[in-house]
Amino acid sequence: MVSVALLSNPKSTGNRALLPKVRSYCARHPDIFHYEVEHVDQIADAMRSIACVNPRVLVINGGDGTVQAALTELHVGGHFNGAPPPVAVLPNGKTNLIALDLGAHGDPLAALDRVVEIAKADMAPHIVLRELIALSNGEEDDRPVLGMFLGGAGLADAMLYCRNKIYPLGLPNGISHVIAFLAVLVSLVFGSAGFLPPRPRPISVSLIREGQISGRFTLLIVTTLERMLFGSRTETGDDGRLKLMAVDQSPMALLRAAYASLLGRLGRGLLTGVHVERGDVIRIDGDRSSVILDGELFEARVGQPIVLRTTQPVSFVKLAA
Image (cartoon, rainbow, N blue to C red; front, side, top):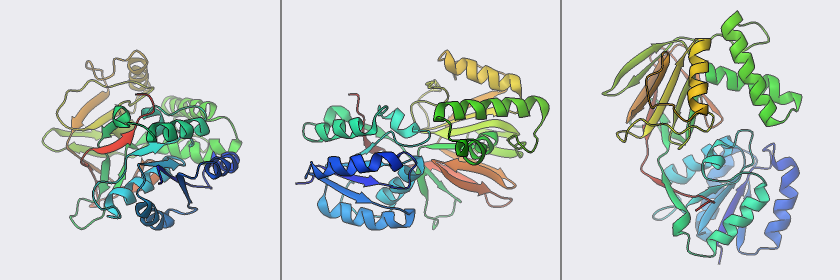
């Protein structure tokens, strides 16, 4: 009987060194069904094969982009009869936001071993429910893309800057993220230049039934994760599931948000230039304004907004019960 299905992306940066060890581990555990994909268009076939073995847990071994594509196919593709298996995520990407939210950090192989151990016993203490972000153009016939963390405005520009300019330097992820953050601060104070992130484009963000905020934002975050910025938990009430944070294009507003996050106070009180809200539906309007949902780039254009909704709760495996 297959207890764990493992979906791996060999082209994920972390897998270049890890995958031989993963293959060896799977060879020693016949109750693991290991499927490798090199392109996202292969994930549909992977899910069809995984559905045939009916695993207790699906483990995703790749970066946030791989997780996003797998979650979309898992819950929109209709490959499973009934509810799909709960999902575990190995900490094997550049940012690992989803893995960290589920208690997976450190050695990916140790995390896999922990999931295998959990799958052999009563999993109930480790099952947590998370809503996903469903991104679409708002039309009923548009197939949504599912994820858990969206970055927009200046944050999307900074993420692209880090991906295209900093990561190729081969620095550790933590140092790369600090450099990107400092580059954002410098561009806010002195203006953008060829070697700095570009100036964010104006956007309008509407929370249905809750109002609208417009302007240029250094950070725009929409997430269903428990943590939002620098590991901070937000306190915004229980109504609505999508957590939104927008920080005005101002060095002081960014520093206020960072300071409140580090102290665990984000969303507990009003901060000038910092907007923290919750909503059922969020609409993003702009002219060529980029957003990144778990590693995949999308763009809002005039007359072509990006609409975000929540899904029904989805089961995940949290390694720390």
